Every structure is written in C-alpha cells, then in structure tokens.
Length: 120
Image 1: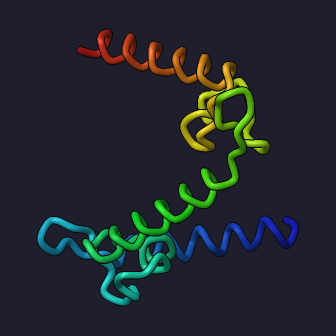
Image 2: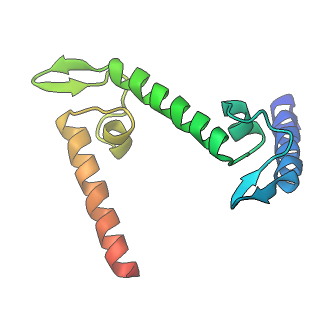
C-alpha cells in the first residue's frame, strides 16, 4: 500500500469513528466535538446541525459565484473556458451557456423526467 492509499484509509477510518459518535438532536445528526458553524464541522465531522449546514450552503454559494464569475461573453452567451463542454455539468456546475452544454443539460433533464415517471 502506498502512502496516498494509507492516508485515505486512515481518513476513512477517522470518518467512520466520527460518524458513529454523532447524536440525533432535534432531528439533526450532530457531532458533539465538531466546530459548529464551520465547513470543517460539516465535512470532517459530518455534523448536520443547522449551523454546520448553513456553513456548507455559504461555502457552496461562494464557490458557485467564483466559478460563474470566470465566464466570458462569446456569441451572445456566457461561456466558461474550463467547463467540460457538451456535458450537463458544463451547464449546471460551470454555468456555461454554449450550445453543446445547453443541449447536454436538456438531455439530462429529459432523462430525469422519464426516470421519475417510471418510478411513480
């Protein structure tokens, strides 16, 4: 086992222990030792209290704003230069509005609609 694999194994073991230490308080899985209201509490302690979920939401919103701010206008659409063009993630995550990304997103939405109808 190489160094990277052993690091991942130790991290997984640590997370498993922390996951087992969580307690249900007011319907939320909360870790008693987590630094509540921080991304660290949400990610490393898997705490799902309201304050940690809010920290996760704020971090995701900041990341989305950062990624979307990198888009450039080209041919009347906002294009992200690093987006994997022609994929649904190019449209949904990167916010790319190029024709291939829009088409991939349309196909993904259509696929999800059909899957939902089949499961209903």
